[in-house]
Length: 210
Image (cartoon, rainbow, N blue to C red):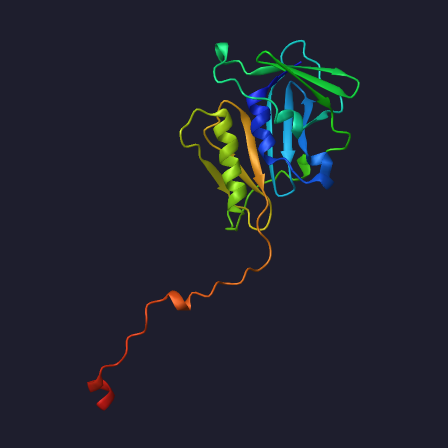
């Protein structure tokens, strides 16, 4: 079976790096109709993507999780003949092998159950303003940069109040994909800014005498 390595690397940006959440330390891949869906999340942000399944390709029925350590070993080829960035995947029990750009990468599939990502996808958006972790927003731009030739890839957040918001991954239009980000919840104290304000005007002596 074939899988786009650029898209795999881009989706990987949203994966968790926490050792205790081992089932989120990878990219979930599952066949869905005529498409293969890729998803990664750390519980705060998520990237979901899909591309069409090539004729003859067969993916495991229940999906599988490609571990981060394998994905991080893959180096995207600078120039690919015909722009094809597909890697060939094969399985032997719990072992996954990816052949790409003349290299072979082998590792164990993550032994865990990936959460149902569809439950997090917003059913709509309210346009109600919210606060988001700027680091997560920058990571979405990083994901777009991986798959796009745009010099300055951009993203657009569709505000949704305290509910998950959809992130439009602009610049990566060759793919059918999007991001989801959770807002920052709870009150944050307003910083002390009084010391940085200009000094108050002092009345002159004439005014004081009056």
